[in-house]
Image (cartoon, rainbow, N blue to C red; front, side, top):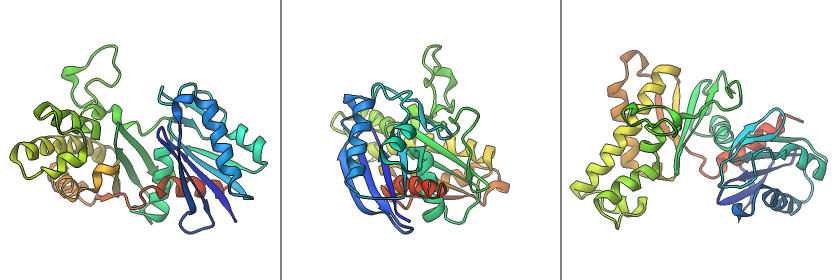
Amino acid sequence: MRIAALDIGGTSIKSGIWTGGLTEEVREEPTQAKQGGEAVMEKAKKILHGYGSFDAIGISTAGQVNSVEGFIRYANENIPGYTGTKVCEIMEQEFKVPVAVENDVNAAAVGEGRFGAAKGMDDFLCITYGTGVGGAIVLGKGLYRGNSFSAGEFGGLLVHPEVRMENDHFSGCYEKYASATALVARARQMDESLTDGRKIFARIKEPQVKQVVDDWIDEIVWGLVTLTHIFNPACIVLGGGVMAQPYILEQVQQKTLKQIMPSFGQVKIRRAEMGNQAGLLGAAYLASRLL
């Protein structure tokens, strides 16, 4: 079994071949997303042709995905014109093999569940903290996608209703306070030179910087407390580059366990383990089930 895997993001397209272990022949190219959805599909086809023959294709992609029919239900303007793209149909016509298409965070959750931080767990959540906050729900070892394939939009969790604005769906929401973008915005209010996570954590021993980080961690925790009480998961997997900082994971673990009801205290809070492999592995595994 030889499966080609793609992970289509707004910045880059990762690709590789999966034969049952870790993804091999991994490559990465810029998405050039601003050229639009049609151009992204042409680039994806070109990348796949570079792998020779394969038995199926697994695609992890940005946007809300109808994984049954294999098209993009909605994508923001990071990839213009991507909404409505019939990814599965395009790739099946081109390569004449079965194709599985899934949202990127869902695919990463499958990868972590099969091979990484949630391996062997039936029920867990996967949450990524980056430009926004993305989420995935795994129940009974299967993805819970919701009525319209949009479940797990944890970034829309309302945490500050006092600042809610009528025409802004994400005002007052988790994404605005707990994302890596939110951390940088907080830090820049204090010091304009703190323009990214690396600069912030290089100065974490400074009391003012540490306070900014601690306040941001509290925002992460409020969301995790709510989600823990709703889903009662065995594990919550935290992804995103910022989670590589040991201080964040330690504080999130300690503070969350203090805030939840004791009967929920068995939840494990873990850092994602598979990194850039997670989406590729998840997409490939889903494609393998078509064979």
